Length: 231
Image (tube, rainbow, N blue to C red; front, side):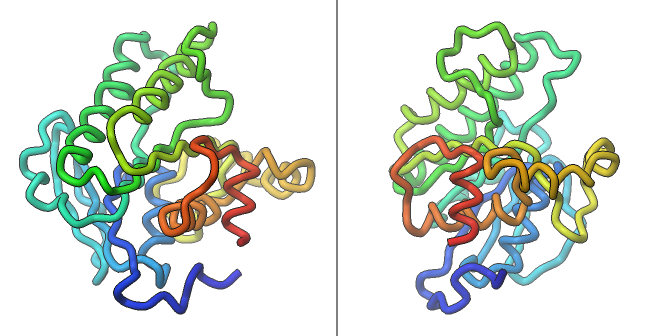
């Protein structure tokens, strides 16, 4: 597959704010954005520097995401935020998981919306998230609450990505150990169903597509992500 929108004019190229580059999802999305002709610039908002120099890449280091004062002057003029930061709920109490999932995400989203409400906000959630906020699975409730509240923050557009199994990008450094052990499952899952697995390149391409062209639904499941990546 060729990079998306290779003939994009310079004036139409996107400026993206990205979180989570030191994690697997964010790093994969970052690498595609840097390689993609439709993207002009990426501003990483990160707790620690990402070890890469690139002409498109700028970094704002903030040890505490609840204190964004150092980054605020840089936030204006961006087209979208690809919010890829997140943690596993394993071993966490609901109150702690809520602080790092709901509270932190909404703080960043509200800060950005106050500066530039015209931007598109894309939130990486997860398959089987509970939109009712009432289910028995803790992480799914908290993610569902986060999704629901993001739609009320005041952005021009909010899209919720619910990926399933994700195959890392070539050259990634931040890959979860178990993905190395079960990566062989990817072609099997894709053969079984279009709603089970994506590559991280697919996820990034779908994000770029919806930022440029929109999408008729707020929540994008795996099959939506894969279809947009191939469009």
